[in-house]
Image 1 (tube, rainbow, N blue to C red):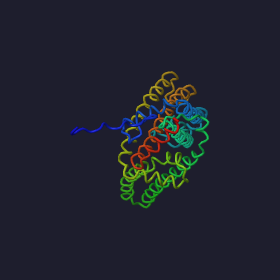
Image 2: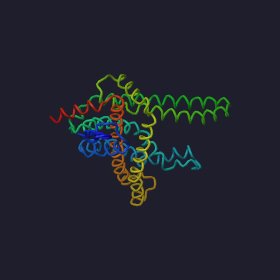
Image 3: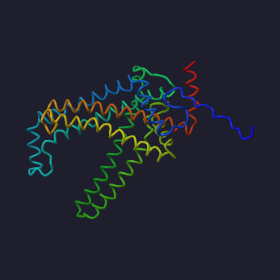
Image 4: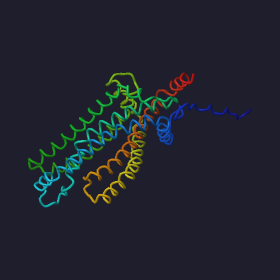
Length: 320
């Protein structure tokens, strides 16, 4: 029949997403599906890891902000005798947050790597068990990469701040101000660029069988040509997740203040209330963001390497 074209072949979808290049809506929907497909790992494991990290933070906040309050008050009085800096009542919480930042970072890093394994199995309609996830020794690669990335960022920031201080102490105020403004913009741009170029590194480290540096280099190459798409999706998801987390933690902070009458949020029950909200918010955000990163990695490989064919084959073998 003239002008007749055969209908397109149906897209195979054995799991949470169709096996073809994904759109934004499919990535977001697939992330929710990944959580529903294996809630025991995606939420259960996440809640366990996050609870431990937040518990450490809560203990330090209670100790530094509550039990050591008199000593910290003396310290803030000597640093800020007029109270213009607003340190009074907040130093304990700030110190606790600073001390537990590495703990929370390590916990979320390990969790992200483990969650990505579950997402990759859900793509082909397979459910992975908790014990199998915990045996994923390659999560140490993810942890090592995070430490190296953090050290790199600290070195860059240290060099920038050190140069500003050096110029300021040598009466080069104009140069210090210029370096502070221009360097600040450059540091932010470099941080965004580095974050996007290494966005897929955790997934590559967890899901590929290569060595550490080979997997990192491969993840770097995969982002080439997809920078703006990855940046846009990652920023959008971060904004959405931030709103959800704020909707949980902000009311909890208000309730804690009203119930305990403690504006500094350092009393025992105030810390308990805010910590519960932190566990819920951090569990939701880490799980969802990890699922998005895992699907972005699979999407990029389907676009560039035809991974969908290998996934379809693996799904067929699993079904058989």
